Image (tube, rainbow, N blue to C red; front, side, top):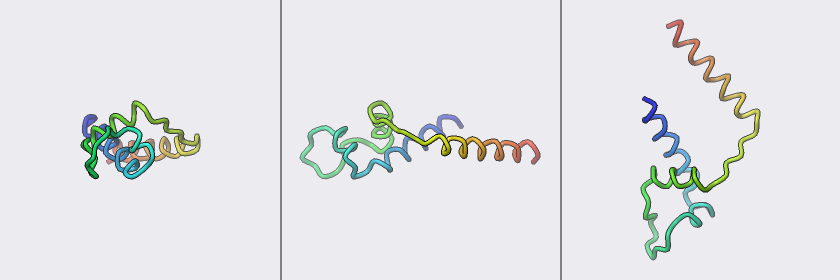
Length: 76
């Protein structure tokens, strides 16, 4: 379950980078128009080299949503 969640997050990170300057900086020199990396691998590389800055209120909102979700799981 945790591995699936990690893969999903890497997929989301990679999709958010498609066509961006960060993707062009990460990508190797390739004459091809398509990315030489898989979506998951690009997300993994991006997590190592890109800086993601989330506002504090986003993190608080995510925490509140997760707490509510887990409370529903405990009741049901």
